[in-house]
Image (cartoon, rainbow, N blue to C red; front, top):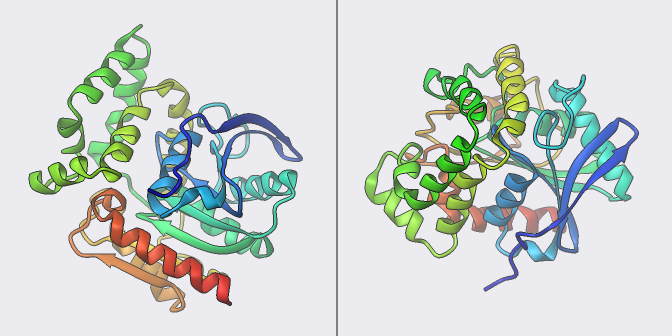
Length: 296
């Protein structure tokens, strides 16, 4: 099996010209900036990289906690543009050249802003189930925020919820994978299964510290323009399920419409977690995309 990202990746608070950022790093090689989604943090950035890359140990994965998540203060850095500038400051702090940027879900707007504002630091962009414009978060998803805030105020409740999730992974996964057989198949996969379970369980670790960033994302995304603002300016691979109930497939379609150079991998019937349900296909397409970047 190819080298995987160690669970105990090097993590530190990093001082940049734009303030402190919590960053985890793992591996050696071509730099990859891994941007997590809602209720995320550096840990989910590492999971993203491990799921997308066939052999992540051959890359230098840089996974920041976006502002408002875990150890990174929100301060005045809530917009996609401010977060993009912060990523550039992180790469500058580490002396890294152009990085491949990989973003999932709510990491999409700041990834696009980074590519547009700092093209010299962006070798290419891989978007997975990513928000690319105005997003009205589904009511069923938005309703979880006050519930999580309330649970965070009850000592021991969130650890208990995490324990139950670990004991009943299929029950937790069925919220994201409607098809029962697809859910069982994904969780039984020797690579996709552990990664999806790790993602599910991570939400309940330090959950209160993931809420400010998530609430900020919901507010910011509701004010974005409906359509992306034009060509991205760097090579882009957009991977999106046509059955995504969280970030509709239209987000990928609209990006393709304003920038025909975007490569679109449409996963028929795929849901928001198509990265896990179709991981082998996603990895193969990403590997081909990265190979093209290296050859160009």
